[in-house]
Length: 123
Length: 241
Image (cartoon, rainbow over all chains, first blue to last red):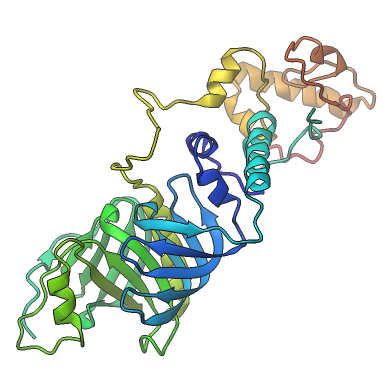
């Protein structure tokens, strides 16, 4: 479960629906942009500012011309809609992301270096 | 074609350059601006033709960027950058891509400029893309009206706030912890590690290391299963003395 290394970003995510989008890592998703173009691809990253990184993208521009992009980064500002895939359980995704954030917060805020203690049990 | 008046002479960026790609062609709306060097810096994206003139793009104006290897869409693999701004293009005597004239007149509200950066070294595209992602993330949208992120004054550090309550302990990994030690602390650590190395059964309470006893000091009610401190725990740590 990928969680941002940044305290500020974790806090932002925890308090907004961006946390749902972050739970879509690995899912093929369609993003509608402000200028009415659309991009369909696999989400590899969503940050707290809703910047979305996609891979293997089918991009349809506003004239309807289709092209393929290996990688695409769209700024949050330019996203109008994100189509949550049907197979995604929204509530479970949000809960999982929140748990991941809390694990990082309480038991070791860095991925690098060893965790010196076993994981805590959650009640 | 006509001169691109937005091209200016300026020195290449010196600071915060995450990636630099020489021998890169810049193309605006299908017309080449020449060959030069692309500088992906934290403050802005710059391209300088080999003659020394070029332009810069500010990240907040960049809507998206992408790696395109689709040769049907464009005959060379490139970094595509869409900018939310107007750039002066050549005069009408030069041929324009089809449909562009109409596009321009429709776009009073939403000016769009499409840049393509075509490196001679195609294998660099991933690095160029990633560098741009990193730099873009440094420029979050200040006009984000949806955000409740009212961090007035100092950045609100939820975790530091909770630490103040005394409930949640901070754990440092070994490398991080070292950097937080004072000279005295480091001397203490060295001494203790020396003691560990010598003795097998260690029941010393080391600073920052929780044992069964020290758990009860924390009243947070969070049950944590802790293995007792085992001698040699730092054995595999890399210690530069």
